[in-house]
Image 1 (cartoon, rainbow, N blue to C red):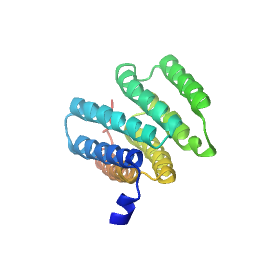
Image 2 (image 1 turned 45 degrees about the vertical axis):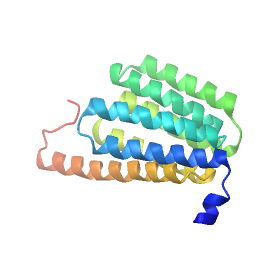
Image 3 (image 1 turned 60 degrees about the vertical axis):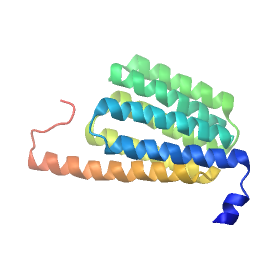
Length: 182
């Protein structure tokens, strides 16, 4: 382990540090019951992710992560708005096109598209399934670039989504009239 750390450049070390900071924000955010605090913590996590991706020179992921912050804000205010979602999707595609470096940039683009559609158009279990798929795409990108904190953070998001899906499914089975977001 000490050899791994000793062999890291300063930039790689800063990237790993930012990934771990993002992981911390994700843990605190998902443990929080207050939705407004969760959103602030997720925005903070995404700032750390954007920096992490920049340190790893994963430019498409970094730029799309900045757009995730914008998306979170817009989707909360304009949930269900097809026009704003379409604009966000178009901006994501343009940003990915401008920053594209390699075939692995498909992972952050996939995550951004899934997250955008999910946050604008879905609620409850369908939203969490789509966000779980987005987390998987982000995790694959983090594995490719070698980010330990980023990989752990997305793994935690994925597991949390699965647990929440199971809880919501059981709740809907027990109380058929229950629908999240109604």
